[in-house]
Length: 124
Image (cartoon, rainbow, N blue to C red):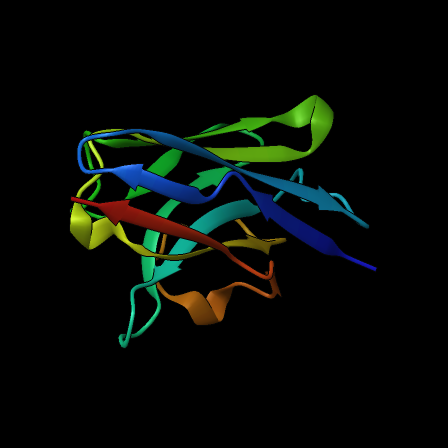
């Protein structure tokens, strides 16, 4: 059974940093793509960033470019999202997603596997 388990969420002040982790188990995604999405309060789920397992090629939403960095640890089947210079509008539930395909898309319906989410709250 595939499991994606996020961790690292919490409350941080405006301008602060957090690092989210997503541990994958149950199958290999070595030929596929891992991504982060988020759902701000009262809105739709939005794409944040993605990374291809094999090449490490990354893709970011414009809203987080230059502030967030997605990376992976192949040995531990873990993907990270380093979030710096956090803003109030980054407050959301953050979800890890996985696909067995190589993707460069912001569309959430291309990802088959999802974690339960972790809350990130940026306070003033």
